[in-house]
Image (cartoon, rainbow over all chains, first blue to last red):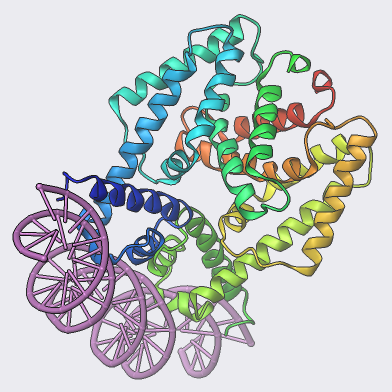
Length: 189
Length: 189
DNA sequence: CACTATTGAGACATACTTGTCTTATTTTTG
DNA sequence: CAAAAATAAGACAAGTATGTCTCAATAGTG
């Protein structure tokens, strides 16, 4: 297990990111495909990640970390609920690949701390409904879950039809759509 | 190739539907899993679909058919653009499993007639922007593509957390969110 | 009831993926 | 430059999925 040199750490990251990218579009892609995408031989792959499961575990940790960071940066308790919601959506779009991989996983393994975060988000959305910024007709469950569907669109649409919608436009449009949908007074968006 | 008796046709449908369901959540699931879900032996599976590709082809045709039917029923040229859009979204949600499987496919193979339908939908959305019913700040590309992301949410959220959001509620909330997001005047939704 | 269609169980060879290992080559570092 | 680290290439066995085939059992039909 190389853990000292900087070069080694660099290739490790390359393999990990290639893994996230490939597994996001094909969860059962051969490891050789991941190695190829990382520009590395299969031998080297196995030197950094003994198993397929080892890779998935590392990718999962990266995704959870990105998720936590996004939530922290969003500052869920500041401003109106809708403002916090907008910040959260924006932050999530900054860690797209890892989060997309995470959501396509079948077993998103329940993290104990993850549930607390879920509660914080639910509280933020409820605050939004109470302060009149978020549409009370939409359930908190729906709002918090549908964000992921939008992330999905933001990630894949520019990949599949880059000539029609670039990354930036997709982000922008998704954010507008999310805000209008969630707002109690969409005209203010 | 049994093609005469009704019983045979029935099991064929069962296998096909099981295939769509299983492959939607795991595109590389073993054929034995599909057979099991259909309540059929692997032998019988192969009797109706020689290949994995044969099954995928049949599923694709079913999906395309559902897609065409939905668009037809929606009556894209009637009423305002937003009204037509609402009808389209509603119709699409009636063929969820097949359409979900379709969108998770890597090679959605370009059908010549499919492109015409795409143009019709684009025309419908543009009409909506011109008649003032659809938000002109959202691109037609985004609106037409993001619908699929919402279908994704409507399909999967009730599967993963049925205790929090049922099929009916998910549909209702998705439709409201889609309308609010797309409308030029969301307060009218 | 007799006949036919449909199905289940299992054997079998093939192909692919996986994880481990060995050896030679390249790259990095002191 | 010389030693050490990192990598590529490939062999190998084990596991699994696949497609084909055969034969016996079951279900459906006239």
